[in-house]
Amino acid sequence: MTPLLVSDVAHSGLTVTDLDDALSLWCSGLGFTLERVFSLDADTTAATTGVGGATIRAATVRLGHQRVELLQYIPPEPPERAGSPARIGTVHIALTVSDLDRVLELCARHGWRPVGTPHRMTNGARAGTRIIYLEGAHGGFLELIAPPHRTPPRQEPSAG
Image (tube, rainbow, N blue to C red; front, side):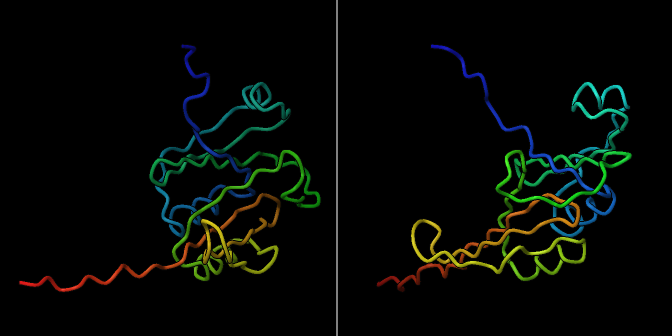
């Protein structure tokens, strides 16, 4: 049997405008744990990402088994239209949240805006789940997924 070529998803990556602000959102706000902060010099940045003339300040944050790598390019690419989640190459990160409205408020304070209104799934495996995409002020997308709050089944008192 041939061994698997890919065994794990190491992390999701998101380019951010300000690493310190991003860490405030992801760690203090959303509850991720900071694993490490690191930098890549211009030569390593060019060799790794193909972006010349820039360095990277970066951090890896973790929630459960999931890792997100936040990258701040210095200097940043010139700002352009933020893009579309449908454009090939665009990255989004999906987060399961317990209080969608509270997370929307928190994200708004860090420059993230909803691209629509929360949509409630009406059928299928995610029936009752509220979902919305947010766009960062300088690009990037988050998907917030709020499963319905389920009331545990009531247990009947045991006879005896």
